[in-house]
Length: 240
Image 1 (cartoon, one colour):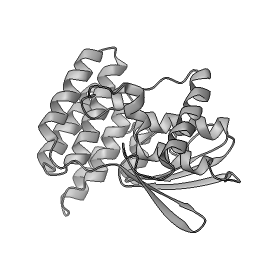
Image 2: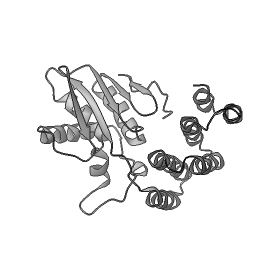
Image 3: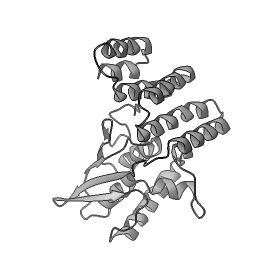
Image 4: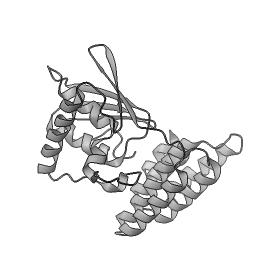
């Protein structure tokens, strides 16, 4: 928690000292490095983000999914400086290099005492067409208010017949949120758990949905709990 707090405040030297002291008597802990990398991304700190990512690859070579997430964060830093081609090339090369048994995105939500699971890009749910229609409605509402899909969070090649929108709308938590909204009555408090870290596009999407639909949405991802409030803010203060 200290590493996370220091990284949010951009106190990176202090955070690194804590990590160094911890590692004198303990094995390196991946979550500490992800917190540091998230802070570097939010601070647009190019040198630190590259340094932390390289260190993660050295220390945790088998943590493929986290390394993919790390590569996306570094590419976001490049994009923030307008270096979109570099960001795309870096992201693609790292994903290609790491693409071994990368975990599929799963989300769970509870409706009427029943746990319902959603898998990214899977349309096997019996109400899949209603869910997709609801995602379409939410998307239209958000776009009217200036929302744009952020392709920098896509962690694979876009296939023939796909678009940036169709890939990002296939993320499991968007399906879980939409499923809640097709219930009657619509719940005012939505709870979701997911197995991976929330991506930046889904984070922005959920913030806006909570504001437009005036509801609370709680998402427990692999890293932290996000409480999205009806005022359009998240408890993580955009540190994810």
